[in-house]
Image 1 (cartoon, rainbow, N blue to C red):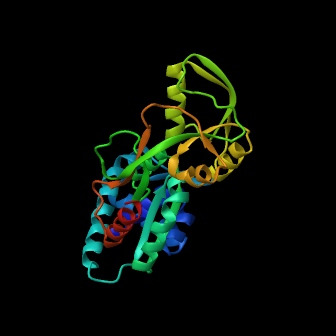
Image 2 (cartoon, rainbow, N blue to C red):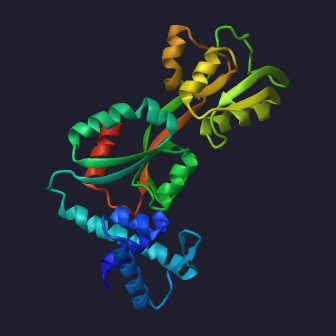
Image 3 (cartoon, rainbow, N blue to C red):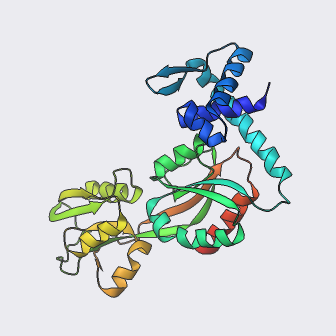
Length: 291
């Protein structure tokens, strides 16, 4: 069997069409079609069916996917071992939590670019649960996110604990969120529901029987901070995202917990993934910058 056909199969599944797979593999669509047809003949099964404009993997194809992922990992590992003494090159798919991307990653990326200028980085912002899923499904090489539970299939390295802060405008009344059973007439301004620090805040409010007026969802942390500074509501964010505003007096911190609440930043990859030289250098840059 031609191993390239398995790589083509995996790429079509990831991209959702023969045309997009051809673009990613830098070949013609007819080559992709030929690879899939030959693979189906060799295996004696249909791998795809066309629904609308998308190529949907068949049940028989789905059964093969775990083994195909493992095969492509082995092939990638062999290639990387052969190139260990060569100049760092290739692609690196990195998924990052939004706050970490905005406030921690610029220094990491700048350092990595100096050490590995030939490596192409594909960077994407996701929530922590989506990052974990991307690593487990081999849709990303590396993930930088906050711990959302244990997972035996991921190799994780601790990048440090990050404290959380409840912030408000200096014009806001000094509400005490450590007191239970109260209604606070303020809006909570935060990003999506799967945000880990939002979940911590809302869970704590439920435990304390505290209610707020409403929740305003914004994706950008900078937009959230500007709305809070304009006294449109309060927010609960990693302290490193609001340090400058707290220092300048643009925001103030409200009491929320007697003991600091923290989240843990992680660097992770699938345990079966061969760690390439580029991945090693990227990890070194992260530990240097986070420390």
